[in-house]
Length: 315
Image (cartoon, rainbow, N blue to C red; front, side, top):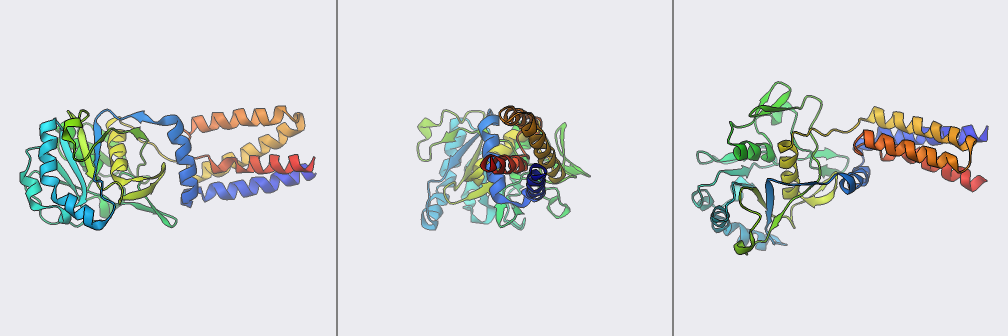
């Protein structure tokens, strides 16, 4: 009876944690870092160039250098330049410094000054999860549909197709489409090459790539893979879209269901054999995590851990 009571309480606790996991930034980081450890891909078409600024004064001075920087990127063989900076903060001469396609960022509310012909404007927005702003990816709500994300605009230019558009419940770029009706897309972790600010001679990774430029040290967001530069997150979104991926969370109901199922399995296995039980449960959890692409079941196993720990102490 004590066994059943212990695991029942653990199951309820795990179910509650699983049901609220999507609103828990700490859980987002824990699960995200687990995903990154197993699923990082190699970025084949993006690169990042980070302003080394650590304060507003340095940032302003380096933004003034952007016209020369984009001209250098053109000479280095870049394909597209994405300026992850609010458009109103850019020096006007940046638009005449290069013949490369440019994407600039809108303000958080989607506003931006008039842009020269051919310059695309992308959404830099974030979505709120609990007390932290978490970069999510493709906006799905109607008020954001007038602007596509920076990554989507960049992909359209990279491929030389018409600008991205929202078609009912899909984001369409060329002949590819991603569903957005169920909520914003997340993105997968990628190894993105870094270009060294101020040293164009070392930009060997620039040719043929879309280069994302931003203040990486000052613009750091809490993402699903820990705190990282927003510019890098946009580049990862670009690579995710380019690969045709549409990663999603498993969902709160799945989190809660797995919490209950895994806890019941732990209780049953514990009765079979003290050592065999944890092994069976561990194998089941690994299988479930793999099935869900390691994306949404981290907190769900807390019931197993809590129940096994309590029983071990009570032996």
